[in-house]
Length: 581
Image (cartoon, rainbow, N blue to C red; front, side, top):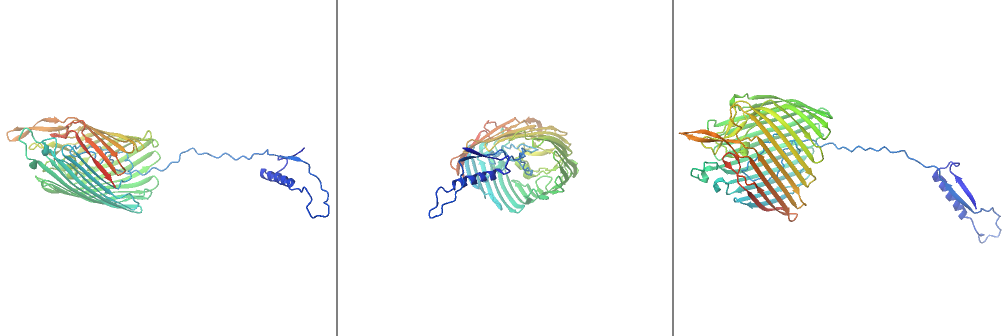
């Protein structure tokens, strides 16, 4: 047997051409006739013979491709634009009224969690001890790209309270309507808020005859309407957010407040790293009350123009705040001018940023807001805006690991006409607004921590330390030195949702009086007890539409006094059901 060898080193063929040649040669061998064709008379001419042979094709050449360049860098998506939002970590109906634990957090830097898909509509009803009834109806459209609208109704009342049963009853009712229309990159909308609350002045002297429940009642009616428009496209050169509103408030006596408001923010990009901004607010109040002030008007206008420059690691804002307020308590100047300077530096990208700055502004004070802090206010109040003078602050924002956020900030300010709550000498169950005739120096240290693990677990804490240096006032009445809260939720197995809130407030000060003839004179300053408050909640989903819940407030059963002479209810438990559709 002979060997036919085709060597690729001597034949300049590609590997595919060599393979075709070999197959063609083998086909010719197989196609040779082995017998004469029928019908042929002439004998075939003798032909040469091809002896048996073996064909072997040898490939010595290997095609090699160049190595591809591999990119190990992660694909980075641009971060969403930062928006200023009011952060709320609690369930909207978690707390019951009259506990009045509202931490005065001055800095809210942790971003709000992404909103969960709207349930659309649900109704919730519950009952509890102290003759408590709770009801809520949340009726909203599902999210669409064109329109959103809805109404939220809420009512909670307790027929009895911690002091003399009906003499400390309380009720709160509210209704919120909203609608928003999306027109390309612009959103326009309006909100309507209505509310009515009833309270009792139950901080009376219990050593004296018990007053009639009708003679110690207080009630607030409030309403607010706002129309707004804002830009939804963060890539546009001009960003804006503007609103026009009206707020009305009245109490059970003769006090009332009508407030027209204007607010707006605008930013114009000069380039990829710089822009100019303007934030402005205005408020025009018609105020009516008993006492020497009677009816009056209160005007407030303030604006902050600034230039902002943002680099890879450093960001700078240079501006100024100019404000005017017609309130001239303690003969303060109606005009306030403060720098608005902020410098931030990123030490570790997306991990750690430090910042510092100078600031200060006029802070608008209204009866509408004061009555949400303290419902036991006296008549004839002298309400005035707070002037926050030159302010120095510094802090950091950090996300050291996935799901963990840490923020801290220290602020030193010099305030004029910062209000405090003090018991009235004639009727200690009611509170007056008092002001330090001199400058109040305030050092605030604020911290926040939030840990989130997917959608299962969230745990956070906030704390504030306030050190007041006063001039004419003896104590920072009803402003605690230390406040902290812990909050968390846990989704056990998509059917059971657990929630916790815990509060700690240090002691604050009120004042007691003794009778000296026809006058009441200060006896001594009363320190309220430190506050420990624990609240728990559980929601269990029976079906996709039906769930049951139970929530308990003040489970430590501490009848603490956030405001002197006003103990809160002990353990308060509510249970009920919720139906969504």
